Image 1 (cartoon, rainbow, N blue to C red):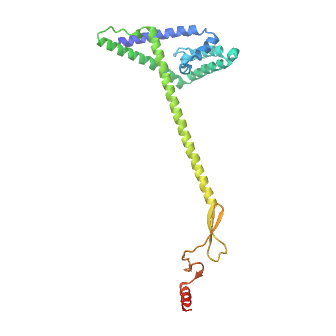
Image 2: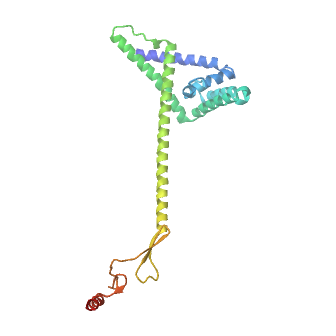
Length: 261
């Protein structure tokens, strides 16, 4: 309980210092604010909307709007004609953070991350103190210093924001891959159906009209081939064909006459 009380006190001190820093940084010049928002690693630093706007996570909506107006004016491209491109990027970062905090769900997620970072540091402090006590050593840890506590919370919070962003990008890439796969399957299905329609259109078998020998015409991909049917087959009428039409008895008598002569 003592450790929890110490952590809460350190956290309150941390926020007091944050407010002091916000008050100091609020008078930064336009160039300084642009540099802050576009500093190396800003793609991860700017994931924390409270860090972008330099505002207390517990600030009211009115305070949020006021801070947005102040900061957006400072970094607006129209106010920074000598550095329009960088000013535009800085303005977009401020606008994105502000819009995120206007959405109740997004703001809650951001607050949850901040609180999770604080709770993690407090838990680690508690574990360190327990281990020191078990070892018979003084239970003082470096995070007891308000500045060290602030830095620890800041680092852990940024780490959590970064991890969430990495997971979001992974999900996005996975979804994109799945959509691409589905689209390829749809295209393949459409192409297959198209090929089948072409096959049915270009491939048909029909009786060659006027053929005395029972030939058939095979139309395959618009190439006409005449195929003589030499296989004996029984028609519905019971007749047999073999190059012509004749009954079995007549064929037998013809063979006998040929043998006699």
